[in-house]
Length: 112
Image: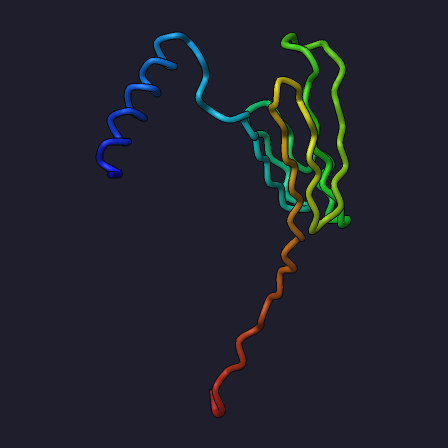
């Protein structure tokens, strides 16, 4: 019985595609940042302040030119913030905690 449904679904999907009807769900854009590690990826600055202060500063230009104002969003470390972009799309900004760097001094063997 399932075999008869599969061709019907395939034909329906092809017809919707030919008509230009979108079968995809809304897009979700995700950006993950680590506190204290600044970087730039696809136009969004990640932890733009570069400080390890338990908050990530996401920053991007509101226009396509290099002179438009910047949007700044602060996300606490260990949390995420969801922003609705319109037309069913959203941006998920996530801030990871800063890794503490622990330097270990090797202990020489006895008699060295």
